[in-house]
Length: 329
Image (cartoon, rainbow, N blue to C red):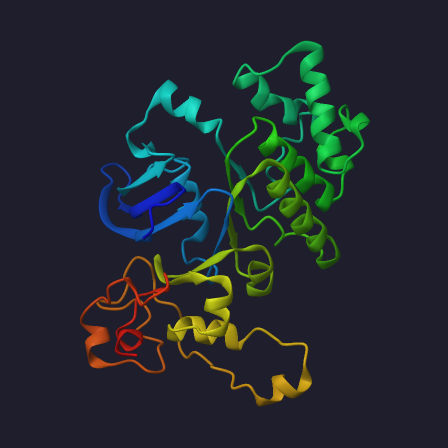
């Protein structure tokens, strides 16, 4: 992968959660392979979309990158610094440059704290402001996300879902980060509000030069906001390419199936399209298939797919695919 202007580099990131059995003497009997060795880069100022079905490991990957989960294996480099080797005060100082916007605006805000206290907390934790300066900064942040600056004394239950998500965005922006993980920030919102939040995130990115990892399962939204898109399945990245390249020339059978389900607002084109129906269920991440993770549902599976795991290769033009058929052309 190109090394020019890279802010975040993920190398063989792995996050396994142990399966324990027993009460008095618990023992490990297996592991949930939530993230199973993924690699990619995010360049400064770009948005990398991460898409896939529910339970494929998208959110876990985002949290492992930020070290909210300490990875089982692999390395995460942020601006050249290996985050997996940082601890204590070193990691705390680095967290100022990385933030997250959570999926659920109802669960991610403390109901016992006022909006002013919620947004001002990261400023206090990192010693960036206090007293009158803190109050002014909080009001400035509320204005920035389109809320009344005099809402500082209100509580989260007094706001709608879209307004709560704006508060979550203001909290993430408080410490002036370089990188934000957007963990499905619009999936819990009404459709009428989703476009407003997407436009707000784009405006903030242009204004402050932010870098996003945008996690979602809505391919239409990801196409709108992302520069490049990574498709994830059962803890692995199946395909990674430029947004337009991926949507016009998907090379992996799983990506092709996902895109075939996206409706097109043109009845003539819609009637001529062939919908790819995947059979069976997603395998358990506690017991993934031996070869390619997608081999149990792939409509064009070959014998080698069930025995060997396809390498994640660049087919040209930074179009990365993990598929034996794609490699054959």
